Image (cartoon, rainbow, N blue to C red; front, side, top):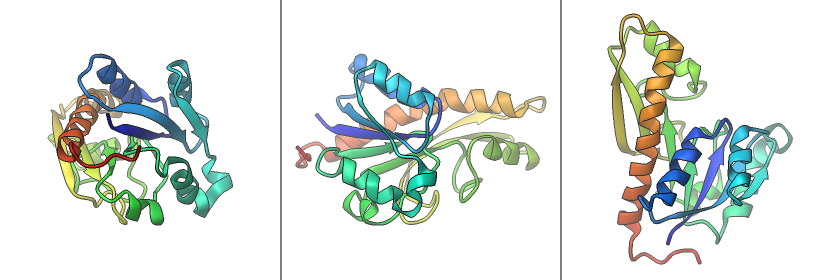
Length: 197
């Protein structure tokens, strides 16, 4: 069984999708850690399930945030899943977990990715550019921002009367499916490879 650390910054609906998939035996991995870069409801969701949690305030840790996360996950987690995590990882954690850190982004990358493109900012850009299709992307995390190799994407139609909240709801439904599918792919790709513990 693979061990996963999930990094969060918000309400944790994607974390909940992962935990539900584990309970239904859709994925074989186990979430052993949930780390947030601020106080958020996702931590409460994890705590209710008895999962070890950590809050590392990004304003306090600043440039040391990635190193602190690495200190916590090292030799414990096989994979790291960024599920609505707003901070940018850098340094040793990217080297040691190369091709084992995945991120869920609320657009069809390479469109509407990069610094400042998160949450409603992404959906606003979709509307401003009159896109007819949007969706979500799960990709590997590298040294860039939303530049890693794409694992999978799921699409939704943008209707002419859609507002930001409408697009957000549509994309979020697909995110819950995409993150589970991506973890399944990781499990298959790494099956037989030595796990951390």
